[in-house]
Image 1 (cartoon, rainbow, N blue to C red):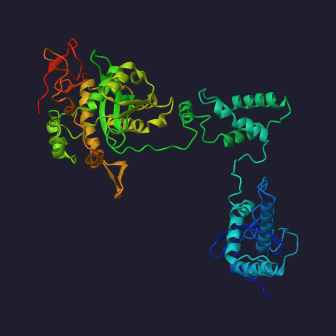
Image 2 (cartoon, rainbow, N blue to C red; image 1 turned 90 degrees about the vertical axis):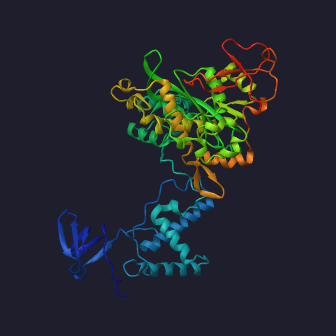
Length: 546
C-alpha cells in the first residue's frame, strides 16, 4: 500500500538530503529545518515531500504523553489494571507500537504513516471485538482524547482519582508536617519560609527522631510549602489569615425571614470619614446600624464618636419611629411618593403623614456580636422591655450576621467615598491629609446619611427576589410593601392608647423622652412606661385619644 500523504508539524524528525532534521517552523509552503549540527535551511514543502530519500522518522502528533509517576498508586487493583490496559491499546493506536518503543516494530494496521487516525480507530475497535471486548468507536475516541490531554490519569474513573496535590514524590511525613503549620499560624505574625523550614525540621525530629526523615532541598521545600499551603495566606496578610480562621468548619446555612422585623442584625464599625466633633477636634466616628433581614431595610443608623450602650438601645427606638422629611430634602423622598403602601399605613399610624420613604419596623429578634455596647445590661434591658428577643452571635463568627457586615460595607463604598474627608479603609489608602479636608460636623453627616438611606431604600438589591419574577431584583421598599400586606403592620403607639400608665397625678400620663440625635429636638420616642414620678429631665404627655 502506498504511503499516505500527510502534512508535517512542528517537532517532527525527518531525513532529508542524507541528514536528520527537526521541523523548526512552518510558513505557508515553506518549511524551516534544523539539523543536529544546528544548521538551518528553508525548503519548499512540495520539494521536500518529493525529494529522494525523504522520510518521516518520528512525529510529535503520534507521541503519547508521558505516564504520570504514581498516578495509579492507591487505586483498587482492578482499576489500575484497567487503566494500564487502556494505556497499551491507545499507545499502539497512536504510534503503531504497543509500548511506544521507538526502536520496536510497527504493526502494519496501525502505522500512522500509512493509515489515517480514523482507519486505525476502526481497526482497533474490530480487534477488540474479536478479543471479546465490546468497545464502541465513540468510547475509544473519548478515551483517546483523555489519554492525549491528561495521560494515564485520564484513563482512570473520575470517582477513583486522587486529587492533584502538587507534592509529587515528596516524603509523606514532610508533607504532613507542613500541612500542620497553617492551623497554628492563624493568630501568629507572618514570617519567612526559612523560619517555617526550621519549624518543620523540629517537628520531624520530635516525632520521628533527629536525622530520621530527610528534608528536601531548600528550593524543593519552598515549592512543596507553596503547594501544600495554597490559599491559606501563610505569607500574606495576617488579618486575612485570621479572617479565614473564623470561617466555620461546615457548610454555610441560610436563615430566611418571612416578615419585617422577624430577624434584625445590629453592628458597629468605624466610618471612613473625618468629621468635626463638638469640641473642635477632627477624627473618625463610629457607625452603628440596624438592618432587617427580610427586606434589607437599614432601619436605623447613628453616628457617634464611640458607640455606647445607650446608643445601641436608642437605635431600637429609632427603628420604630418614622423618619421625618427634613427641610431641604427633595419632595420625592416622602413616603407618600414612594412604592410603600402609604394610604393603608397612614390609616393605622398617623406618624407616617410627613415621614420619609423608610419603613417603620418593630424588631422581634436582634442578632449582635459580643461588643460591649450590645451585651451590656442597658441594651439587654431595652430589648426585654420592648419584647425583643436578644440573640448574641457565636464568638468570632462574622458569618452569623453577614447581612449587617455587608450593608455597613456598602455604606462605606456607596456613601462615605463621596463625602469630603474620606480616608479609605486603611492607612495605606489615605490621602495626604484627610483631616484637612473634613467639612462636616458629626450632626451634619448624620443628616446626610439619613437622606442617603432614603435613596438606598429605593435601590434594587440582588438579595431580594420575588418567586414570580426571579429575574428582577426588588428594592427594600418594594420587598417591604410585598411582605407587609401578608404580615401586617404593628403601630408603635396603638398598644398604649387609652391605657393608664400609673405616672402623674391621675396615672394617665406617659413618660416621653426626646431623641438626642435629632438636633431639631422635634422627634419623640417612647422609651419607658413606669408608674410614679417621671425621671428628672423627662416630660410627661397625654397620648392622643384616637
